[in-house]
Structure formats: structure tokens, C-alpha cells
Image (cartoon, rainbow over all chains, first blue to last red; front, side):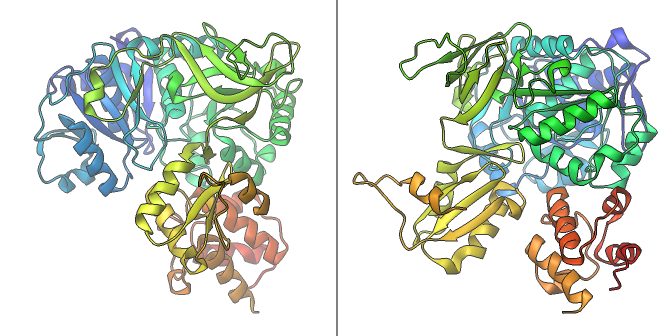
Length: 470
Length: 78
């Protein structure tokens, strides 16, 4: 069993948007009711929202050996159907308001505004004993590529986070991201681990209700991807009076050094902590953190390896780089390195394919004091609003939807550029990408080119395209 | 261009919507007006009217109509 709720009996586990408080005892008894209706070692899709039902589902499944696939409740239904087809889940756990949509499923049980649905599938794919959880690698594109996380992975990463953030039961984090996203989930894991109270909200930082809830329940911390910190800056966050706030964490992409410095200065001046971290779903969640006391001195850095983890840098030949300030590919070792990927149901029987070593695909350097800095990326993907978006996959999506055009995808984090040869299609392409990725249209820009530049072998010359993208 | 046209244009351009969608539009009623869209919208309005909005007004800006009311505080009549 992962979570030991009985140790924290009367502590408040969850504070909902309507102000309702749920104790660990109440959470445990709801878990017992729900788990009694599901066969262990079955697979279930949890359509997540920051609501008590979604959280109840997650902890119940993890504790009872039921393997959840965490998906956003707003995921496009067509994409969802395709995922159901590739994984044949035994059950679905969905907001009650969506239950009607799944006509071929049987409604088994309703609790906390969520409905348990039995699908027509039963144990179609056997599951590996260590498999605990499946998470998407890119928020909302509906890609069937999932990260396979084990019970050991979750336990190791959670214990490490609890240790370096020094979490105790008096913490009250407020949610700022979906629990289907590994960073959001790690905040929930690490706080339920120590008997703290998680404030659940579907509201965003741009809403009065969010800040009201923050103040009413004395939120002590929140996490955010880079655009959240840009938003806070825009909101004149530095002038807000938030006496209950103790710590802010940042991950999900590289924050600009200017903003890193600004938040570090604010934190120091106001007796709060600002902790920049680095991670990947492939490492359960976290791999590094920059200790709060170094936040200003080392701004721009993603810090050092988390307790129990270890970093190294590899040169092009795979040899370890010993000297400082030399760029190489970042390699991580630790018990939180996940088992591997799954592309479809038949991969769920696979065991550990990484043996505790993750080649991150990120290029980094280490300074003379041992602090790491991300400087680039080996693979073609962008981080848009905290989610990974693969550029080659996006090109494939576009090519299959718009069959008679030539296109190429490039750009920078938080803004993808699509190069097309037919300018009339600009708006349709943006609308298509918005629909397929669930990202705000601000993330996409279209540039018209006469011709997509290619080398003799026919490979697209992205460096040429990026030069005209200013 | 009247203030109303400038105000409408900010919505149309940053959210990528049609003019007939602006009437009675509310925050999060369409996918385009999420927190990211909101941030861009506020930036656009601040630029076009040359103002700097307070935190309380940015987070209270919950609809197309509400925004008109809030902008009065900054001497922008729509």
C-alpha cells in the first residue's frame, strides 16, 4: 500500500472549491467503498479534474493495485476513443456529468460526483506486477505513448520530494495544474504522504475566486510552469499581500533567468522560498532542485540532483564529462527512473527497460560548484505552457489532415511556428492545432514560405526555417 | 476608431474570434479565453488604451461587459 491515511486520521486531506473539508478518515472510507467494486490489477482511465472525485479515484487505484491512466477530463472525445481502443481499459472513472457519453459502458457506482463505468473489456492485456501508473508524455495530443511508472518509482520520488522540500502535515498547497500532469500529481503525492491538506481548485490564477480560496484556506504553497510565473508577474504578484504563502516551486520548462532572479529576490525579501526544479515524466516527476538559499546566487540554474539521485554529463561519444562548464547530454540515475514507455496495451506486460538510468535528451553544463544549467535539447520538441509537444508528430498530424500542402514545424518554447506553402490555410491550420492539442491559439504562429527547404536527401532544413522566424 | 472598436478588436485579435462572438462573452466560455488568452487580452488592452491595470481588476475581468465597466476606472469610456 502506497498511502497510509490511517496515520493522519483527523487531519484534513482535501479542501474543495465549495469549502468542504474532507479528513483522512473520510478519504480512507471512500477509498474502501470504491476499491471494493474494482478488481485488482485491472486498468482504468481516470478522467482528471482538480476535484475530490478525481483525487479519490487516483489514491484508491494506487493503493488497491489498480492501474490508472491519468487523462485530462477535457480531452477531445475522438482522441479518447482512440486511446480506449489501443488499451482496452476494464473501467473508466469519469465526472458524473460525462457518464452518459459512454453508451457502451455499464454504470457501476457513483461517489463524490464521479462515476465508475465498466467497459466491455475484461483483462484484455496482462499487466506487469510492478506497473502502478500510466501518464501521458504530452498533455492533450491524445498520443498513445504512455510512461510506465512503478510503485517503487512513485515511492522513491515522493520520499525524496518530501525530504528536500521539508514537507510536514501543516502544509496547504493549492492546485495550479491538472493532476493528470506529472508535476501536479507529484504535489498531491508528496503532500498526502505527510498528512497535509491539498486545496483543490479548477479556477485559474487569473480569477478572483482562486485568490479568494487561497486566502480563505491559508494556502502555504503552489507550483507553476514558466507561463504561470509570467502570469504572476503580469498580475503584479509582488505587490500582493499573501501572509500564508511560504514556498513557490517552479518546473515544467526553463524559466527565463530574468524572471528566476525576480522571484528569487521577492522570496528572499519576503521571507518565502522560491525553488526551481527540473524533471520529466520519465523520471516519475522530479530530478533536480535548486535549494531556496541558492535561488538568487545561482539564478538560471536548475540546481542539483534530488536526494537519492545522481547526475552526469555525457559527450558525443558517450564518455563522461568531468570538467566544469562543458556542455553534454544530461544523464540521471535514481530509483525514480521509470520502467519505460507503452505504445499500446500489449506493452503493459513489459518490465524495467531502463534499469535506473535515464538519458534525458537535454543538453546541460555544470558549474565549478556542481550546479547544473539546461542549455538546449537534443530532440525536436517544444515545451508549450508546460507540456511537451513533439514537432515531428505535429507535422505528421498536419500532413494527414491537410493532404495537399507542404509544412514544417519549428519555433521556441511557448510558441510553435508552422511554415506553410499555402497562405490561405493559415487560420484553418491554427484552428486544427488548437483543437488537436488543446493549447491556446497564442501558442501557434504561421509563416508563409515559397518552398520548404530540404537537403539532397529530402530532409527538412529546420535551421534555414528558424532563421526567417523572428 | 472608437473606444468600443478598439476594445472589440483586442478580443477579436488576441482570442482569434469573430465580432459576433464578443457579445455577452464570459471568461472560460470558449477555449480561447483561458488563463493564457486572458493574459494576452489584458496586455493588448493595456497597450491600446495606454493604461496599467491593478491586480484586482485583472482578476475581476470576468466578461466582455464586466471589462467595459472596469475600464471606466482608468478613464476609458466605452
